[in-house]
Length: 81
Image (cartoon, rainbow, N blue to C red):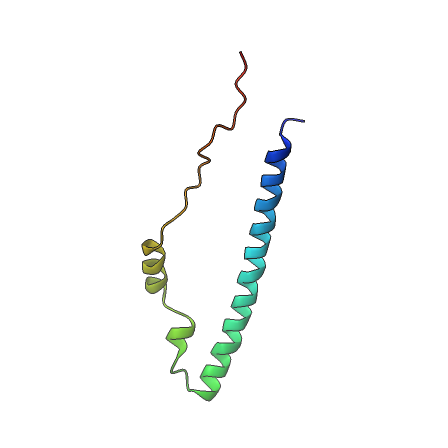
């Protein structure tokens, strides 16, 4: 076995987190779709920009958020002498 138990546990937790985020994203997309249909039917689409913001607004918001580093900062290789 090439990997330590801690590495396997970390990868397992990462995979579960990614699956949760995907599931959460799908639920939010469905919810927003329902809101858009209801808004267009009952409110004549007055609040569509609040439900589904434009691409520019989303990119502006993402650029303002602090992005976590994708690099592991600890030593991950085994040093052999």
